[in-house]
Structures are given as structure tokens and as C-alpha cells.
Image (cartoon, rainbow, N blue to C red; front, side):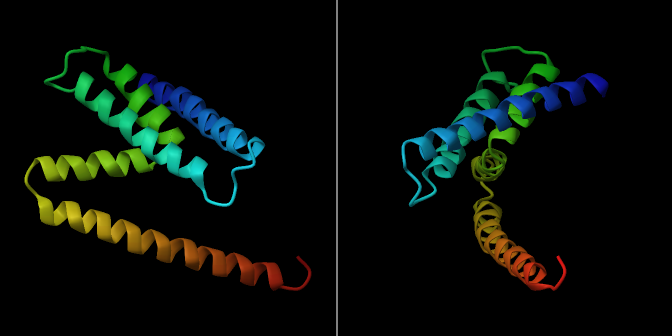
Length: 133
């Protein structure tokens, strides 16, 4: 348990820094009108977690320690983008033939996350308007 936690924490630090540096690069290049850095992080993180899952899974060609798999998949990919986890989980459902649940995961994630970010923004805007804060 302790080694797993250390692996995830270390990987999360690396992934978070990578995402930060990617955003800084796009900002330095003046590419800010569309959230390209986020899109690139989400797509590349999804690519990376899929690659690692395939290569290190039960049918994969690489036998790695569970801690190393956690370091990469939960730590780095999770710190870099949680979209990678969503993508892998949806792919797993689809590969298992559970297209209804895969579609539901996509639909609910899109609708609920957009609703949640809207609600969070509205609450934050309301708190910003409170006197004395």
C-alpha cells in the first residue's frame, strides 16, 4: 500500500508538471484563443494510458511491477489528465461489447461535467460578489 501510494504521488507530480509546462508552452507561443493545451494534454494522455495499458496488461509484451504500472497510469497519466482514465474506461466497456454503457459514460461525462463546471463557476461568481471578501 505504501509503495503504491509513493508511486502514484511521484507519477502525479511528474504528470502535473508536464501539463503545467505544456500550458506554459502554448501560452508563450500565444496560442490561447482555444484551449489547445488542454486538448493536447487530454488526447496525448489518452494515447499514453492506452499504450501503457496494452503493453503492460495481461496480454502485453512488457511485464512490469504493479508499482511501475501505477506510477505511469494512475500517477503520470492521472496527473497529466484525468481524461486518459475516462478514455481507457470507455474503451474497456466498448471492447467488452458493452456499447450502451460506453455511450452512457461518454454522454453522462460530457453533460454532467459541463453542468458541474457551470454550477461551480456560478457558485464562485456568487461568492465573489459577497461583501467583505
